Structure formats: structure tokens, C-alpha cells
Length: 172
Image (cartoon, rainbow, N blue to C red; front, side):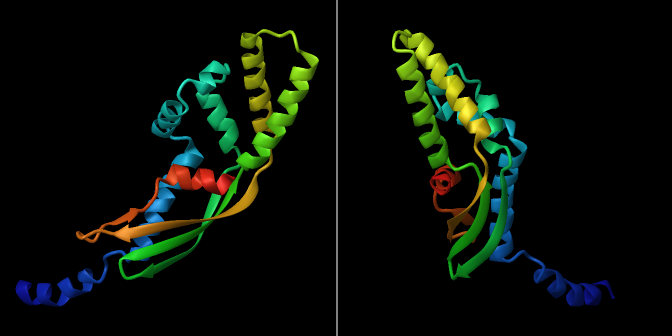
């Protein structure tokens, strides 16, 4: 009797495995939720990738990331799977780096004109303060981004590019 019950119920469970679309959505959601929650491991990675540049400017990495990610959100619009390749289209609500850089250049140039005699240490510290101020004052905008995925020989889906570089490109 038990064997008969198993013979009828096992095929029902076989169809319960997540689809490629669901797996990709879960993967992207995991990455984006780390950004929204300012995951400690992510902050450490950003700190390593920024090298000494933020530190030279007198900027605390955690403070900078918190300001840069303020208002961040995402919506996975569509996942299109074609055999062993997929594309996920996402709408990101994020502070655009291009706006930040443009505003920073203007503000820092104004500072330099007014403070020609400042020494290099003071200039670096002021550059950091200006950058953080600009990031704080930048509003989020919606940006479209696409992330490509490939399925390996074991059937596992992997994002093709580093998600951080894709996000950076979307922020531009």
C-alpha cells in the first residue's frame, strides 16, 4: 500500500522544482536585498574595492554606502529564458553616479577657487566632505538595467557579469 501511495505522489513532487525564471528572480532578489539592508559583507567588499580612496578623503565607508544607497529599491520587471541563456530586466531606484560626479566637480571647483592657498591635506578632506554632501543631497531616479544569466552543465544558473559592475553601469 505504501509503495502504491509513493508511486502516485512522487510524480507530483517532481513538478515542484523551481523554474529557471524563479531561480533567477531569487538570485537577483538576494543580491538586491543585500544592498537594501546594507549587508556587512557587502560593506566590507565595497571598502576593499574602494582601496584607500575614501579613507584618503576622510570618508567613512559605512557612512558613504549608507548615503549612496538611501532610497535604493528595485523591481524585477521580466525574466526571459531562452534555452541555457536568460535576461532579467530590472527597474532600479537609485542615486545616479553621473549626477553625483557632475555636482561634485562643480562644488569642488568652487571650493578650489575660493581656497587657492589650502594645503593638499585640507583639500583632500574638503573634497571628501563635499562628496559626501553631494551624495546626501542627490535624489534617486529610476534606471533600467539588464542582467544576463547562463546555465552551466549541472543546470545551475549564474549571472554572467559581476552584479556590482552592472549596477555601477546602470547608475551612470
